[in-house]
Length: 152
Ligand code: RB5
Image 1 (cartoon, helix red, strand yellow):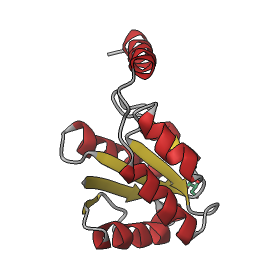
Image 2 (cartoon, protein in one colour):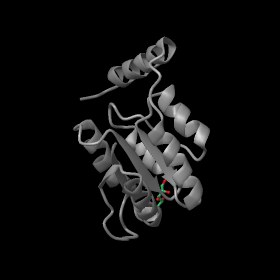
Image 3 (tube, protein in one colour):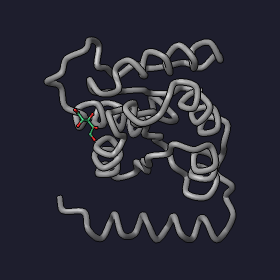
Image 4 (tube, helix red, strand yellow):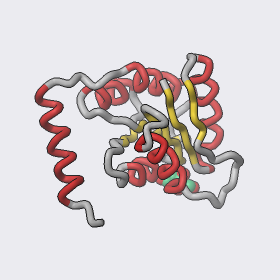
């Protein structure tokens, strides 16, 4: 799978771990930065970079890492078509894809350890949207909200 990954300084070290993990599993990883540890960088810039790679069709899914995972999930969810969520457990990581078609997993490097992060990422990558009628209906309602409140 083609997976875009990005982090600010808060997630910089964990990003390297996740990049290595996904690459070793045979995935094509598009690293959207940060390319170096810069305490002054801002998570919305990496949320934008990862979201654009997905919306342009260059990546199928994304992983975003900041200190808590909160800022990254808020920022990425502003992009129409991005369904980003903070998950620190395997159940949410796979069910978020199966039921809610989550396409960006957010992690908080100051909260989650490396091994759990790798497990959560595995469940996220291994899951597929179920396509069940009730979930498609709910997703349509989410998309309708996004469209109704879009100000262009
Ligand atoms: C940056 O220090 C930190 O605020 C950021 O990584 C993230 O935790 C925001 O949600």
